[in-house]
Image (cartoon, rainbow, N blue to C red):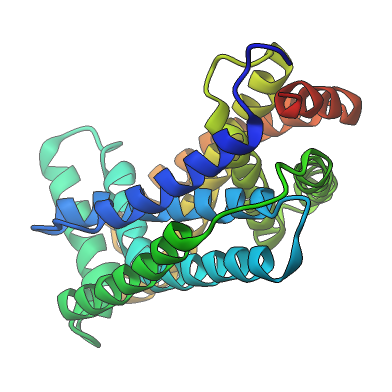
Length: 301
């Protein structure tokens, strides 16, 4: 499309920017809050790297392109895996914070938060030094991200942007997400919903480089995928907290506090599930034909 920047250049630029931002996010993590935000940002940008790298293989795949893309994917996946347990602990603490905020008075919020953190989070820290574990994991993740950046810095793509290949990759993710989502909603299968979340996140991140100055179809596809990924993430976090609550229920059997926490968690899950189902219905309204037209408009530079 005349007047639009080359789609391949846009995607490659965003790929390099995402890898640089992932490394920068882990640069200065002074304290738990900075660590939590840094890890969240790094993981988000690493997911963007993993979504964008396959779109950059180019028409002349060959050995150099395949090796470069595979290296980028390998190093970013390793870093993401290393940061996963750190993020999971932070996500559990964040879910606890959100549940206890539902209590009416400050003292109840404080007591509930203290009990849950001591039972569900600090109990795990007793088995391993949380700070040392996080520090070691983050440092290893930094090294992996540096390696991904080194590959990107040395890579000179050739052959131009493979518009058809990129369309196939994004269209496959869309189709797989729709099928998986329809079936997972019927069974409330957490594992399958998590796979839907990953595919929806992939879609949103693969389309992120093009900003808001794109045709309406592409904006709609990206925004609904982003909303679905966020809603599925919230629903999963509360579901996992519910699973973790088994330990608190066993230790504090019969306590009125546990009953109050369960009530708050039950309401939070109902609300999160309603938001997730609403986002899923909006996403499922997107047809394959409209999706292909959106990609055609987006990649036709």
